[in-house]
Length: 75
Image 1: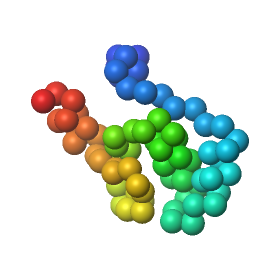
Image 2: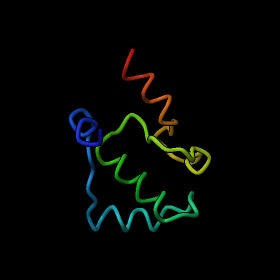
Image 3: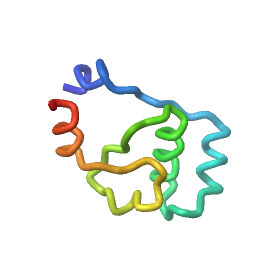
Protein backbone atom coordinates (compact mmCIF):
# COMPACT_ATOMS: atom_id res chain seq x y z
CA UNK A 1 0.00 0.00 0.00
CA UNK A 2 2.83 2.43 0.82
CA UNK A 3 4.45 1.75 -2.54
CA UNK A 4 1.17 2.61 -4.28
CA UNK A 5 0.81 5.74 -2.16
CA UNK A 6 4.29 6.90 -3.18
CA UNK A 7 3.18 6.72 -6.82
CA UNK A 8 1.11 9.90 -6.46
CA UNK A 9 2.45 11.79 -3.44
CA UNK A 10 5.63 13.77 -2.99
CA UNK A 11 8.12 12.51 -0.41
CA UNK A 12 10.15 15.38 0.97
CA UNK A 13 13.66 15.29 2.32
CA UNK A 14 15.17 17.93 4.52
CA UNK A 15 18.31 20.02 4.33
CA UNK A 16 20.31 21.78 7.01
CA UNK A 17 18.60 25.10 6.24
CA UNK A 18 15.16 23.64 6.86
CA UNK A 19 16.33 22.10 10.15
CA UNK A 20 17.58 25.52 11.27
CA UNK A 21 14.31 27.16 10.17
CA UNK A 22 12.38 24.51 12.09
CA UNK A 23 14.45 25.12 15.21
CA UNK A 24 13.62 28.84 15.00
CA UNK A 25 9.89 28.19 14.57
CA UNK A 26 8.48 28.77 18.04
CA UNK A 27 4.88 28.15 16.96
CA UNK A 28 5.29 24.44 17.71
CA UNK A 29 6.42 22.62 20.84
CA UNK A 30 7.47 19.44 19.06
CA UNK A 31 10.57 19.37 16.83
CA UNK A 32 9.14 16.59 14.67
CA UNK A 33 6.08 18.74 13.92
CA UNK A 34 8.36 21.68 13.08
CA UNK A 35 10.33 19.51 10.66
CA UNK A 36 7.15 18.24 9.00
CA UNK A 37 5.97 21.80 8.44
CA UNK A 38 9.32 22.77 6.93
CA UNK A 39 9.28 19.78 4.57
CA UNK A 40 5.72 20.59 3.53
CA UNK A 41 6.61 24.26 3.00
CA UNK A 42 9.62 23.46 0.81
CA UNK A 43 7.60 21.31 -1.58
CA UNK A 44 4.56 23.62 -1.52
CA UNK A 45 2.36 20.87 -0.11
CA UNK A 46 -1.37 21.35 -0.14
CA UNK A 47 -1.83 19.48 3.14
CA UNK A 48 -0.08 17.81 6.03
CA UNK A 49 -1.80 14.48 6.57
CA UNK A 50 -1.79 13.50 10.23
CA UNK A 51 -3.94 11.95 12.91
CA UNK A 52 -2.97 14.79 15.25
CA UNK A 53 -4.23 17.92 13.53
CA UNK A 54 -4.37 19.83 16.82
CA UNK A 55 -0.57 20.03 16.82
CA UNK A 56 -0.64 21.87 13.49
CA UNK A 57 -2.93 24.80 14.36
CA UNK A 58 -0.04 27.23 13.79
CA UNK A 59 0.95 25.62 10.49
CA UNK A 60 0.80 27.71 7.32
CA UNK A 61 -0.17 24.48 5.54
CA UNK A 62 -3.49 22.97 6.63
CA UNK A 63 -3.39 19.66 8.46
CA UNK A 64 -6.05 17.12 7.60
CA UNK A 65 -6.94 13.65 8.82
CA UNK A 66 -6.04 10.65 6.64
CA UNK A 67 -9.74 10.02 6.03
CA UNK A 68 -10.16 13.58 4.72
CA UNK A 69 -7.17 13.11 2.44
CA UNK A 70 -8.61 9.91 1.02
CA UNK A 71 -11.90 11.66 0.33
CA UNK A 72 -10.08 14.45 -1.52
CA UNK A 73 -8.10 12.14 -3.74
CA UNK A 74 -11.01 9.86 -4.61
CA UNK A 75 -13.37 12.62 -5.68
